[in-house]
Image 1 (tube, rainbow, N blue to C red):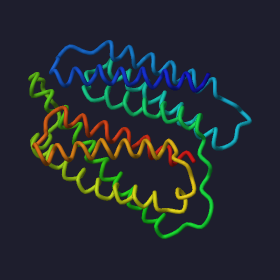
Image 2 (image 1 turned 180 degrees about the horizontal axis):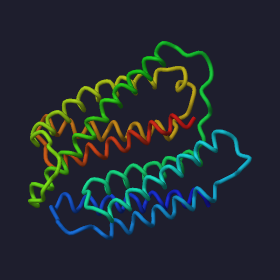
Image 3 (image 1 turned 90 degrees about the vertical axis):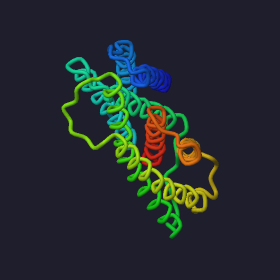
Length: 257
């Protein structure tokens, strides 16, 4: 029951994300109330999953998972209140995408629980963790700048006033892609190191491996298109958002072990 609720919540959040992003890409001024409605449904389903999975005698690992679900519900609820109070074009898609991937990750974790790592930690494992973490930390500002670019692009197309003084839109875009390029190299080294580490040599392919591979593929395709055809604009910024959201899901799956 809990897994079904989590999957349904994830689908509702992803549908809301698509509705919010459609507004930005098309340069629409009217609010996406259907996106907010889908987000409300996702929040209700996520809360139901958290309540259904609550066990007062559960261990620390189960309690931490429930805490993540309740935090996701709180973040989604706060975002919905802020959307009703004022028009924040990026708040809807960013929150719904991140909370949606959290719901999906928790469902995968419930169906495919990962064993805790065992055995001595080798140098390659340390390098794998370090490279992956640094690459992810570089993805964070690239994600923020990509979203700022997306918001600025929407405001320019719709001639909406902005109270924020931001760098030129070209600077936002170039800086985001430069950070992504450096982070991608480190992230790639981290993934290769993970496959070579003792932890994964004797294990079957886990959901975190598949999610990490999907995030790597999203970034790889985006970078190839960027440097071969000069890909840019709102859709390119959305690719940065998608890559970061999926990467965050992979990182969360590793943390939940």
